[in-house]
Length: 110
Length: 320
Ligand code: SF4
Ligand code: SF4
Image (cartoon, rainbow over all chains, first blue to last red; front, side, top):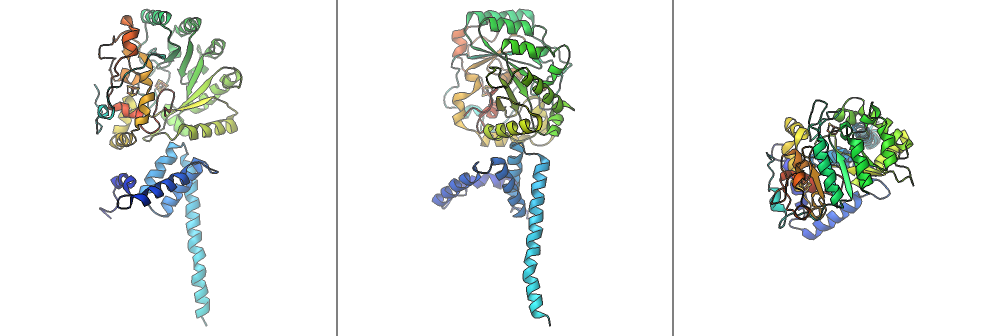
């Protein structure tokens, strides 16, 4: 992947509004609202974000939210436990989608 | 002696000159002796250190307090408890009607001959700030030494039993958090609520406020960052997070720090970096001049990014 994923690219993220500043601003306003403490705490939201980052395989978000979880004093064990939720969900999603495969098999088999 | 290289240099970030606005806090560093030798200690304190404030310097400090109405005396170290004249110093400050705050690692209050200090502090109404870097025992122990977490828990229980942190007692118990690695602390409000909930649920401990301190890239912490190849990224993070809104509340603007040898500094960090007050203000307690010191120009360096990143950091935690 060489040039595609570089750590310093993360620093470019705040400028993502380039070429479409109004949409960029709206996105950041929304992002800020969604991530701040509400009914869920900042801790809970940081753990959700971390798991989304790994399941969606975004190295930038993995970096950002691992740091954010550490900053929030979330323990390594809590972070790992959350990742197992992501892993189990991902496995479950794969298996649930085999329904489609099995449906087709059942239809096509004599 | 300042050898931190940040881009752009901190001085360029400050519009005009950074100047003090009076002296509301006199911070006294009683010396570098400490029963612990924590991995992040910016002072490099430890049991083998010999530096300690002399009786003569302490008298000069008290003379300054007698003739100037500085409301708060903030006592730190090392382990301030290891200074033989701590009790006397506190008694004199209280007799002068000053608020007194002692910063402690806590665990020393379980050891002889320091155990009786808990009731002494309580009888004098001394505010106590106990360091507890992390709610995870492993992280705290890794940073401060094996068994430190459980001993801090024990001392917090004793402080609670003496009335500290209990509503209506007037005895203030604050905790200080600092990150256990190469990252910055999250917002003080969110960490305080985790600390309050977890300490109450797991240990039935109560306290007043949590101060979140950003680790300063100096001393032992700087060595750790360098050794683990985290230094450049950490500094870049501090520079990126620079927040001009912190400039109005920097602790150096209202605090004067007295080193164990009587040298005057804008803060304890400048003290450790060997940067005394400058720009025409007297740099030793023996030449104390309220007029000049209260409006002195502050000596800044790239370590000041540590105080101005994000919500900002001071001895009392976040500053914006
Ligand atoms: S951080 Fe505090 S407790 Fe730890 S060695 Fe330094 S002065 Fe002592
Ligand atoms: S390190 Fe912080 S407190 Fe010290 S002079 Fe710099 S900004 Fe002020």
